[in-house]
Length: 239
Image (cartoon, rainbow, N blue to C red; front, side, top):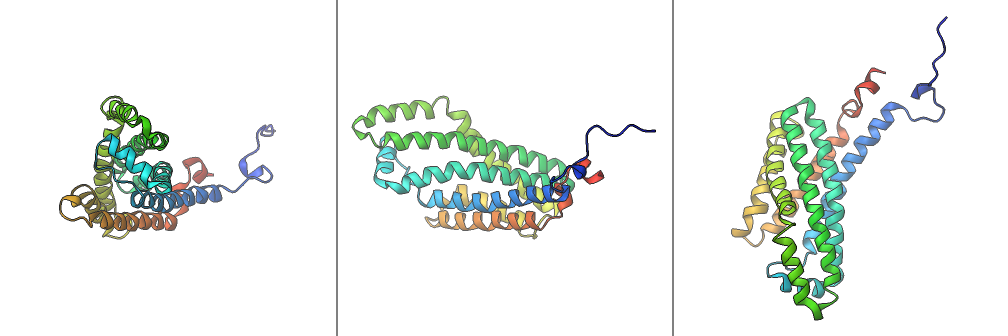
């Protein structure tokens, strides 16, 4: 006679959620991260102070922006966690369609979120510096030292991770036929508009923001409508 199992399965544990509901929760979280992260990113960019000058000009711009500058810094940092999580979730969804491209895109986009989040910490420090403009030269020297020294690798991660990661994601979406057929090309167009459109038109920032919302919003819908089986582990699926 077989001995009884010492550890009950999840299905035998009173009050434990079904496996499919856990997978559905993961899917919902990824979709929500994409949607909310996109909105926070656009809010951050539209409330961002003018950072076109040197460090002194930037600190003065943050001080002049007041609450808008605070909103911009906080929403930018918060968006990195959400967008990074959402895009890594999309890369997971691509594994069955474009496995290599999906993994590479997820890695690059995860690194870009990390790099942007670290640099977002600098923006938070700038909020405190902007309240002490009597020592603006000292604060500007500190910022310059950070951005020309230890901050360079993280800034490079944010920039290169975004450009390369989104381009690889565009190819993966196209080859994997995930979502509507315009989605992959739209991601590639966003990269061009975001990083080269400023040289063509001053309206490129608004076009980039709207395109970003359309892309991430569509990805959120694609994730939300995907089969819950894509979000189950092998153990859960076999059980």
